[in-house]
Length: 274
Image (cartoon, rainbow, N blue to C red; front, side, top):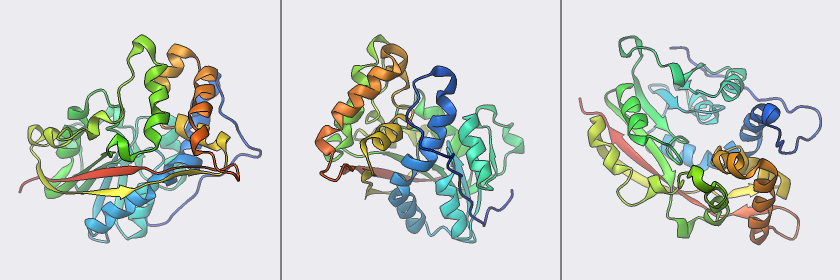
């Protein structure tokens, strides 16, 4: 496994790019919006996990669903060897632009050829995931005996101001049935995934992760880049979803035009027995 010990950055295209409702041009723009706007909102979560598990030169970290790889960059900055899996072509390309080793998680290699890691993180995949048990099983398979898996979920909806905004995704998905991003964070839900995957609980924590944006347009673009609104856009149309998001964000709009929502995320640490 290659070591990624130097950091890179994505380059912003000339000129600001608003959210693009056209199906043909939507995905690359959304990937950039994730990397440039939304991903940094989870830095307190990444750092809390790295601190808790003392990530450093002795660590081998795999990010499942690592998206554009900021969590891996932070781990590499601590001296860890890092690698990632990401099924999204555009996000994977952005991670590779950051000089990270990231492969297509949709076409996983046979188990016999996988490298095992001391820490496997699942920071972004569980909210809205159709099959969380499969994700956790995959994480466990790639963890060394005695190593750890970390699962991240939203905290209680009553402690997350973004809950009311994310409800736009549910309301506008119609019969397509968008999954509730808070479902994986319900009491006992994440814990129930551990034993079937051969893991045992080894701790947990909560982290404040405010979602803060310089303006309303950035807030809409950042939230749409999470992927949680895809079913709503398919059913109701991207322009209408963007309009509803703007309305839902009004209570969090500040006098200077910025947007801020206080949120709590929870992480669950699991150990693969020796």
